[in-house]
Length: 281
Image (cartoon, rainbow, N blue to C red; front, side, top):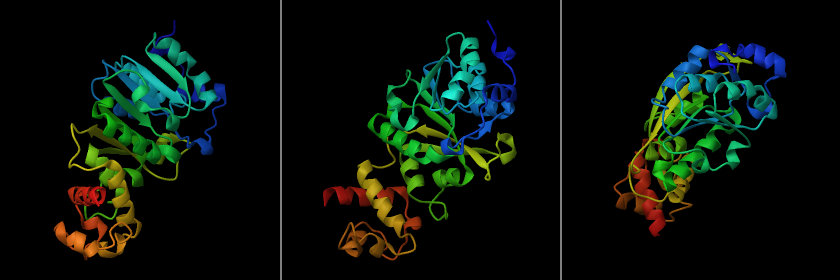
């Protein structure tokens, strides 16, 4: 049986299986095993539970996860060409790699593998944000369903996830993510590390779900409030929130918030207070 260290180079796998990256699937393959190893190590101890990988492609990160000691890697891949290319890795994994043909957007994360569950993935650019939002909903329903996420995004998206109030990147994504998770931007990866090279730099982010949200509120209400506030982010809150609160200035005053403030000036807890008010109105 082939061992992991005896697998052919990734470029050879790509050539043998005709794995030209498909833009429609958001594919950019990361072939530098030093970088994939760094991503795998960022997830910590992988010897218990399951590691979920989305869009493994030719399997660079998959190999690194297995070599880092993952007890089980469950790789979700939509492209059947990649599933064929991963067969040698699956054989070499000695039962530790399971391949699932499917669309990650349609697979409930809390049904995959076993806890403690970690998600480690070079996410396809075109579905990265919707995937993250769906996982946040799952974490809100069941905080223990995911222990850790180490995810690669376009740098601009990574900055939006980790931004603080007052930063121009601060918005809905930062609030929803940081309300439920500790968020840390780990490192950047240059376009040249990928095949084909994307036009943008990528960044790796680590998200650790909190034992409980930063403040009490309903997720759906928080989504509504942040959508309204940042949908017209240049306007003062007394204007941008009028669709939700006809007496917006009065509501803001009661909550101790400046009616002339703009959305990026508010803390996450302030949006939670608005969400609670919306739920009770």
